[in-house]
Image (tube, rainbow, N blue to C red):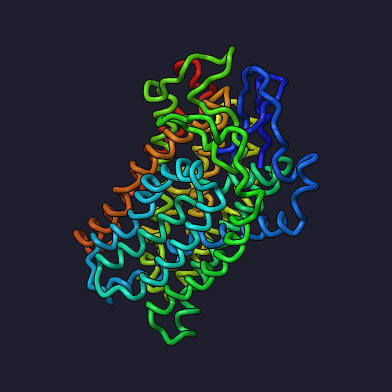
Length: 470
């Protein structure tokens, strides 16, 4: 992961915010009034001696296990979507709704995570998230109809949403001197969980008797394992000790997670002396470009996760092979999520990267149109490269602001706006497939969305900061 000062315009670094994107590459800083003395967070200085080494090890292990559980509910469904549709008598539109539920839940429940963490502490909320994932994955195979299946899926996704948002807070609190390495470890585990679920679900289903219900429900066992370390962590004194800002009134519009255990910096609603005036994110063309770019890349990713295995299967590829191909697509994020942010941080304009990733996406869609089975492995690879627009989007969020408060506000705006924009895409793909009886019309839609992603990415990649009102 790129460090925060790779593209900085000022020489003096500023502490990273506790609640911000995992990749805060190139964040620009502004002078800040010295804060009141604070107790060092766990893992540093004198406070490190008060934190048992086994507890820090448990937190690291808990983060990895939690990250492994943040995508199987989504990527494990794609390879079995045909069986689920037949079992629950879903049409293509309803199946498309299934692939649109994740971004909707991320937009709705992810926004609640900071407030919940302020009241209960991040570790307790992550524990609740792991419990919700476990219950959702247990209840989903028991569903007798579409509505129940969607409700159980939404429960699991709610747990994923709050846990996903709070992982950077956990990293900042427990490992403030190793943010980069621990974020990299967490990101790698998340990508492995995504790819592993796509590759393993069908063979595991076959080994367990062939029922899609058993195959999907088996992932609840991994989620249950993640509950154990977080139950211990949330009961520890270090996790329950209020942070230095916990007793301050954050106000209803606070963007920072200044929860009881986060050790967060000063809330964005109280800018320090010398900071720039309050940001009006909604009036910034750059913020809107980032929000639309984030939404279009998320739409492409959820279309890929939800529908790519079905495209391959309809072309004659076996269910097991289609799952492995999706795993290859998702697995490309493991190495590229480390490379892209560093490369983007060294560029004044990230447009060339946006175009390169977009061209890979268009090439993949063209291949699926012309020879979906013959070149399946190639299309899986190039679409995997295209899907890495996600870490690039997070990196640009960090580079389009000067201040910590700006990063948090821009991140909240771009991601909430983006996830809402991404909802119709997978749903439309399913509807167009039902309407046309094939994949050519959906592929045309996917190509049009990719062209729009490239255009907005060029605008978002310009060397501007939102504090300048642009």
